[in-house]
Image (cartoon, one colour):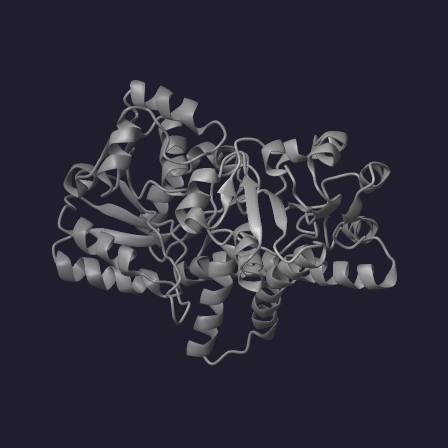
Length: 433
């Protein structure tokens, strides 16, 4: 099949490379000339494990190409997948659909034969209806259908998740479109659940799923606070909870709060939609409020562990999770900002294995960026671990002790062995233990 992908970000690029690996002819479209130039040279523009090798392989064999021309990408395509950003509106926090609408209006004029237009971007309920209107208005002769194909790729594991999905959701109100998408996902038919639902149900599933997981994270974080107050160990509590198959073990890792490009945005968007439809979503509202407050609380804890008015603070981790270079809505980034707000005299030196460039685009020169994790520690009063990169687990605590001015660790990912840290003379603060 010929597939056009509009957008080459954390969703579009892994999706395009994945479909190319399955033998389809894929054209990825983006209006960022620099990004397209890099991709044509076989250079990935974001970090995902395994993505670069697959990109080079399929670019060399001709299964995937890159262009800034909507006409080149869309003309003759069987399926056009829209995977552009839907950032939150700065005031209302609703999903901003200007990029989706712009893409639909532009692609409409290049539809020749029957084409299925699929939304991969997370979009509010009813967006498919609006896209139908826009495309029909821009090209009254166009033969097309709009379907919803919500993505469930985890950043850091996007390549693995593409080829090993736990479910595929197809939202279609038209049998002809359903047949096209069935052919598209034929390689997965024997190894995963493919659920066909109405388009509006599909649009809702992504929001409902992400919001539920956000609630689960906020819940275990509140239980962690309870454990700290009572002397219980949240790691033991979470393990005991997870053995209940109705609950499960995933998303029961306490930490500094949830972040990233999905959970904060999608919970806020669902909250906004609930007001539009006059439906109360009190659990989601409480989760949003609690998550924002938690990051400020983490900053306060770090500052409380320092001993001087202008403390040197070492930060390990800036991305919102390990395995990605994405710093958008990262708890670590928000904690760093909150530290500087609460104490403008604080001096922060940070290290992240993949996220330094993106972090600097956001924070600029407000902090220093170290070349290695140990370079953050010189004369530091507090070491704060904010992202669960596996290399942080291997910290030589003896070396850390020799470099730091004051032996204090705020391990907000519970990565380190508390007893080992205490044996090296550290005051150790974990989460929920």
